Image (cartoon, rainbow, N blue to C red; front, top):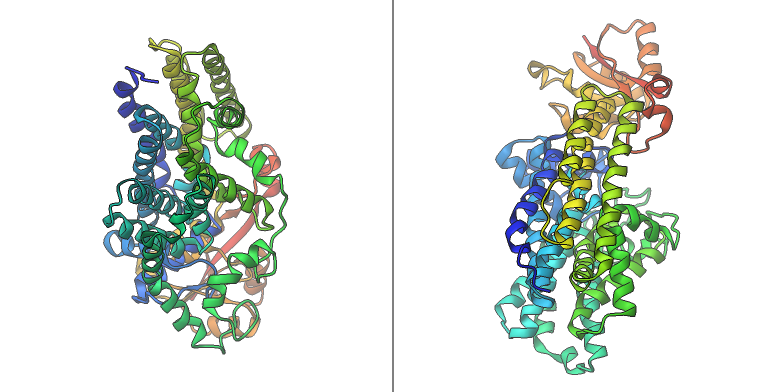
Length: 547
């Protein structure tokens, strides 16, 4: 396929996709994971302690350090705030867009690379991850970057790229763990086996990359050894003699896969199948078609593309067989999903089926508008109908664009759907939901002049309260400790309604500084969404100023 118009509208669509991702950067951090990770990075920046991770009031052992180091560096430059936490992840996401293009260009062609970049830019859960930042933006960028540099090494024998491939692989490992080597190298192994290139298993370049990768992860291994292995007396996961190195190499990855580690889950083998259908919107139908096309109709089977096909297959199977499953795990495969989908679009560009796909996505854009309209009607968010109206204008405008061909129409219709969803989510929906993160609202009530006063949480703990509080929050777990803390008044206490009333009735001299409403907004239910029944679902938290 050689679309003469794609080059012309590609930069404008890409810019639109990037802009749609930006509003989430300026919203508060979402609990629980995002706020926990932001707090871990805050501890690093405030204490200049780049070795030890602390969370929940104790030594924290779960994820490696790399994302927290990036956020802490950002805090050092921009101050401790939501934007500073999210910005480095967003930069890595931009890097992943660039490498998606490069990989598509070198494995397929320029048009496929452009389409894949456009697809990835507005894939639903990728955009959500730029708002609710965890490890995935870092991880995705590092995986696809390492894969592309390996491709350059393989094709051009350019040894400089070995260093880059190893560096990105090491960053991926120090973001999520050693399982990422399966996603980076699994496709290569399958490619070499299928093409009988067994000599590649002895190629010094790949062994050199492996050695360099190990050298680059030494800072991570050092921090784990210093924080945990040198201190067997520390209680972690309710046990002593916990090895940080063992957790890194085994329990955090294989322990979760076999469900034998300290962190367990309940998995279903079909979980990621149906999750993909909504997580990869508005491109899910194209991805299904792309997979079917590759299996049944693709006559241009270039074995080198198994570099991504094999990695996608192996990683998806690993996730599906694992007992520990969360929707955002899939995001690391989105660049590969985008390439598969883009290749499918390029192969059917001049066929009637593309017109059918365009018509279907026109209907989907209208359904998306109807969905946000219904949601606004039920929730009755202030000024939300103006945002729905803006989405309606985008949909109407999409009918009057003079499309040059069906491919352009398909891409524009998908971007129309993305615009309708993301405008409402990030301008109305999430800003409204975030008002029910009581910890954030309570932290706002602590005046700047009291930033040096002791602050604690008892009976209820909030990661957003810990992150946004002007001073470190002490987690109190028992009543004697609570009484000891109160004796050090003046101080602030974040707690439940029952505890607050009990303390006040006992004669404690305290002022109620805030009574924010609380709901677990990552577990939405219809009674909460419905304005008429919302009040019945809310709890009240208290911020007491003990004087």
